[in-house]
Image 1 (cartoon, rainbow over the protein chains, first blue to last red):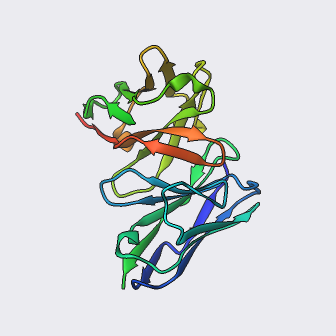
Image 2: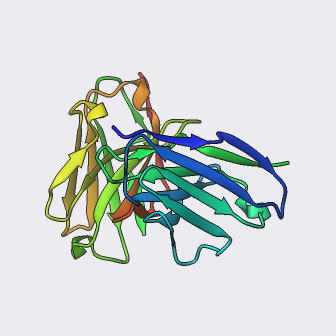
Length: 107
Length: 117
């Protein structure tokens, strides 16, 4: 199975900051990567798919990039509602695999 | 919209059965698969399996053949069956529509299933 290694596992930031979360695949996955936001007690929410495509309705401060093995999720100008846990996901090969998650907390 | 349903508690070694009801759209568009994902309490997300409207399906090898994912297009429902459950199968179970490019959207709200005697 392809491993998706996310870093950091936890991140502390302030409102207005810009942060970047990275995900590294154990083998090439083209751009078959998505990014998800999850808040406590809620289902994950799709932010980015196909590596860099913004899901309609998601604020433009979220952006994704990368190809093959290295991917990033950047949130510019953090808002209070952005403090949550973020996951990457690859569906290039079965079994589809998620990163272990990055918890973004308020500094 | 997607809505999961099923028992909140299953006994060890028994079979877990969940239903995901899709409303506001058709399952048999052919553009999407339909997936099950789970999340043990306090842990990360795990893909379980996916099914197409024609019934073709696949599941995670880590579940060692215990899983079947099925569909009933006439009812707009997707099903998850997991046999021989143990405490390790305690989790919130989600269904989601699956498109290309790691596109899983929308998701159901999830249903918590505990495995205990």
